Length: 110
Image (cartoon, rainbow, N blue to C red; front, side, top):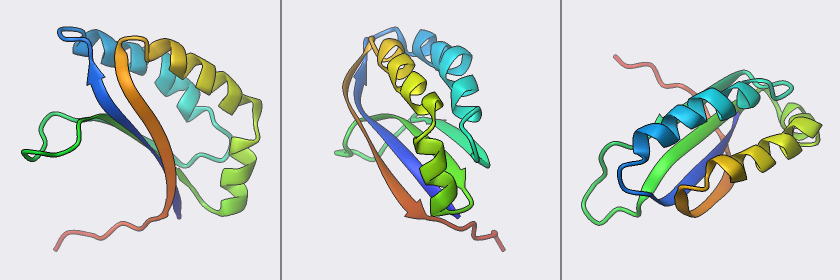
């Protein structure tokens, strides 16, 4: 399985964290779930980090069965709409976001 990961590195306007994540849930999560071929979508709100860690606000993970499925998804018009909406929702966010694709698998706990 391939997982496309988006890392949102930076900070939110102080006091606006709950409103930001409510906006993500209401506006971005539905479009992320509507990407063609997506198997699962995970949104992680970072609550704590190790001392000295880079400031990560949010992590988005989207799973796809294959590179072909991922490529089809990224060439869809939903990606263009998602990017535009993401930029709008990110107005209270200062920083950058970037993506990578990982070969992922689940490792069951004992």
